[in-house]
Length: 416
Ligand code: HAM
Image (cartoon, rainbow, N blue to C red; front, side):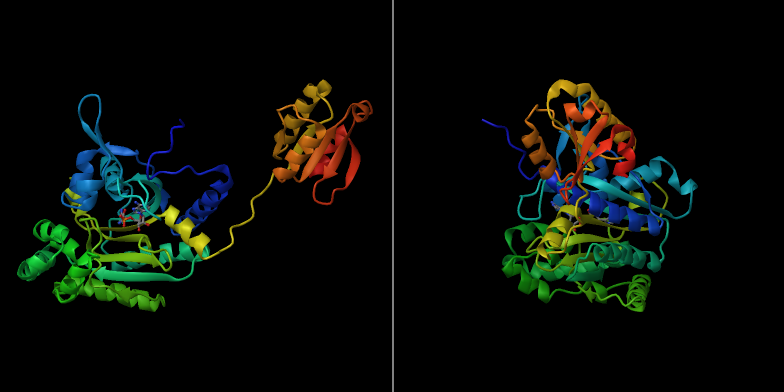
């Protein structure tokens, strides 16, 4: 019996890899324009980083982490997200010494042991951006503008931006008390999970999709009506910058996000038509995380998006992918008598900056020509005994099907 790919993971096959290169290329191009520098952190970290960073009572930490001991018994976890690792790296490498405001981006696999479904995987890829060291509301908006520009460049339409403010430690604590009191009075009608959530993490109740909870949530106190002056001003500024940039957004006072580190602005980008897993990205401000992970108080804001969901959305909206560049030259041989010449030619073509390949299976000329066609070669060179004796080759233009004899010494000129 074949061993299959683990549940919730997938292979990216060669015929799909160009989609990934294309998306990653656009992401890097735009992030470069906005001044972000790439950072690569390990795929696993000490578990404590995520427990402290994301929050002990979040779904990610309680249910979704791939955690295992190393040989010395230290607990490690495959990274479920990129923000806590980036902050760890920022602190460990004293990046604050390089510049007061640091703009970083990352791209790579994340791991969450969730129940797989369309658009939800156990290993998925995110690109993320983090601006560390500024409390300016303009930075929040820059993050939103950056990601919207990426979606636009990819041709994605039907994109909705939802924003909220989840306040700061001060005003949120007061709001949570109020919310808890309200939920206490309704607790018998909450779903079984929310009965637990409202004690440990009442904000998460606001995010519950179960019908019985929805009605209760509708009448719950609203966080944006309970912000302190500073948080309210920050939120007003964010909205005013967004309006100034003519960005269409809607306020969603129940948007709380699944990670505990958020303060003030929280936002999510939704792609219509993706079904229940329709968030193609989300982020917000996290002004306390750097301090919580051992640094000095440093405000920050960021965002991350799932690449698989972006690909699904592009496919679903029937946006055209750029056509793949085929092979420049296929080298075919009439028989195997001139193997060395064929091999030398192949390398010479490659050394001149063109892509070239041959058939190593020893097939007939006909099957070699079929292969050249299948891989979309622009030209095929046919190496035959008779032509070689005259220092010549046959060059076939695979599109026009025109064929001519060319001098070996002149081959590279003919190809370029
Ligand atoms: P998040 O909302 O947990 O935020 O994840 C961001 C995006 O990753 C989601 O909107 C979704 O597109 C994608 N994603 C999450 N889980 C899965 C999954 N199981 N399968 C496929 N795609 C998934 C964060 O991770 C924060 N670190 C974002 C951030 C950065 N906040 C501040 N800076």
